Image: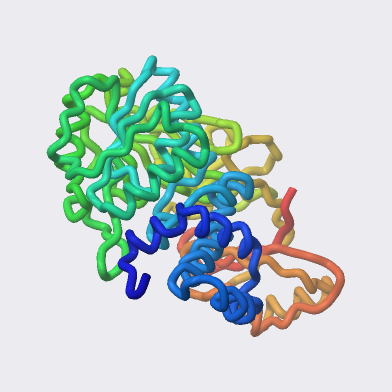
Length: 393
């Protein structure tokens, strides 16, 4: 078992010896790895021990996306952990497919099977396709580990060669990373966005997962565009086809879900800073639905280029976080430092929008000390560099 390639190394983990090793190294901390590896190599092949420890590290990294229970049973590759959809987002998307009457999905570019797992758990039959042999082996192992083999078929193939006509829906998650990191040009995705749109238009229902930073002008006119955040972090954008929502824009916040639909409102007007500042959720900003939230709050913008909403009254909304503003200062580290010292602020949260100053740099310069807390916003108010000091409501 010398010099195993990645696929052979992974398959070795599925043997009884490999599974026993995985159980033994479960929860190994980085500081313990050398001692554990040295001990286990006395009785097991070196490559198998290395593979088991590597898989244990990946499982620990995957907990944030899949939860401890699933991550502890599943298998991963480094790219698979990095690129997988968070389980909460995948479950939400699978629920939308079910609401649309979908009972079978061709999952193209399935990766390690995270989306296929969510679809199968929603009762959807899945054909999971990927061209990488190792990735397919991992996806099969995951379907087996979670008891979903009756609903998930994994096929090693080029997605462009797969006939999806017998499936109710198509889901495409193109590769958006290359040798130099993230790919921002949709036509440089693998497969290109134009191919994915073509495949989507042939299906009764389809969803294409894309980077949340995609320009709105790149969204096909036939699609409904949805930006999704989870616990305040923007996770993805999805182009939906066959939903009768052509041209619709929505922002969906998880947990919930809470969904805000666009109504084509004009940009909010700039108004003087009020008592309250609202920071819209990232999905609201990415979907260009700040105007809808501003109307709900009866507020306006502090600057025509900054997505902060201000109002004199406090209102509750799931789509923005409210702060009570106590001070407005022209940009001055010296004045801010004096104010924080006077207020005995030792716990300082720094947020920025429209400022080149890094939060850590500012925190280092003002040296907060004391028992009180505050939030400072580095931003612009009517084009002027400004510091706003306040606290969450």
